[in-house]
Length: 210
Image (tube, rainbow, N blue to C red; front, side):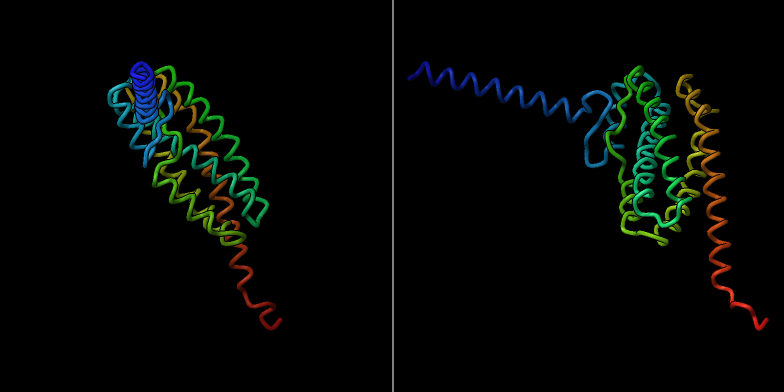
């Protein structure tokens, strides 16, 4: 009986140790992904001690990853919730282009031991949740407005990274991605202006007595 009890205690102890190690690995990111209440903050904390690049370069990678995932998720939502064909097409372009950029960034992150968030940060999550509550024309307007504002912010961030980052590979990634971001902004602004003109035309009194 004593031998059985000792065996049970030893086995239980090993299971507890394995569980503790698994929890520790997950809490610390488990490679290039990080799970936490805010995945962006979690990734940044891990990178403070493990990343093979300076803090500014690692933080850029984390923010770019979260933003890229948001663009893909919203692009998917646009194809399902939008009323206009141009919005749906724009959403498809977001999924295609940002998925490609996200994959390139993941490869860079692995090579430099940078932990990326495995889900969008709280700020980006709020944008997604708010937009998914809308549909049809209301979604179209809110989505394209956000795409204009968001791509302006992205371009500003990527320009600073392309000019100032210490890590040469991430700096080059930012520079390579900028033309795509600028093209997205141009498309979003064109769609927004077209929608504005259509709205103004629909609100004009017909014929005006003619």
